Image (cartoon, rainbow, N blue to C red; front, side, top):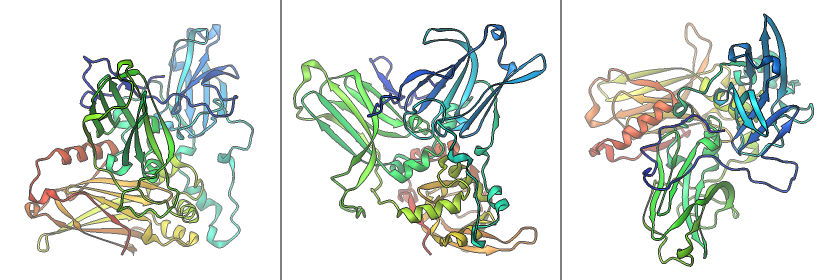
Length: 507
């Protein structure tokens, strides 16, 4: 079930040591005895982790000579259709709804010989990337009441005509032909374009007589937004040797923490999982008001070596970690639902759809610069239906956007039940993030319908007051991550000492 290899040499521990590489989350069993890690259903063998599902479909004896050109695999975020073409005739092998939503663009298939559960023959092998970090009862959805099949029946004018709501659906709901073979640039595909400071809110280190625990607390909203684009299993990676631990973001290349133990552990007895934990020791300056605050956490459990059992005076002799953001309360449930209805009214609970839809909201970006005032203005043209959707859900458009601004980078996000990135970009020079100003206005251009424009104003830094060749260059997520890494590695100058700041949607 291993996904394609990722070049992690810069972050992994030296190969000369006996290093355990944690990349997949094993199945965590709950009360239900019906849930299985592997098994057979409707003639299809399946095997799963918390983040992936592998399907193995043995070919009939008459089909063993067929290759990948004889099969057609179509996927949406909730359905799989497999067809076979022989002598110009098409026939369906199966047409099934998946037990949970999948990342269609990160799923793949091939025809190969498989050796699992007594199967030693040519098979059609399908690898699915789960959206939710969970254990499936099986590969297929039980029953016929799949939420993706529901229709919409507006009964007031504010809810809009059916054809408008249908036009707002995103393509992940529709079937798409998937070409055979593994994704070519896997490290680009699993880039979340987020820093550890956005995802992580703290670290707790605990020990007992025989165990160590490293608990990395995660921001619930940021994690929700990241897993709309990347499976949670592909976000994190950990390397463990007998005397060292390294945890990092797998696709983006950011280090979360690293340290050397004062004594020895047994790497092969280590385990990790994602759990919801109660946060008891909150930072003094955080604004959390909930009396019982829970957040997701990456919990790594390590077993002490036999000769090192007992309490250690110090767990790490040198421990380094990334800067952490502050824990924060989630928005009220009703506010989150209304915002999701603005973002994706047809499927407000579809996390992958909301991530795709957020990127589609920005139709184009204009960049302007004023050489007299040494300022830059970015105009983000938004979809024309956004204003009507805000009115129908009684949501203030000014509260829906947030900016993450660095010296040379800008990211704009839509705030629904979490922050979904709409656009990443690189500036043509350096700016002063603290000078940022934002406003929203309606524009009725000559060749376009009236639509909202999100305006961002920035002051140029002292060393970048010349004319910029390109004011703003739009980037893909992996390009944004690369730009952030390069920005962190640049030698600090006077203007570079300013940290990245977040400008919320307040005017």
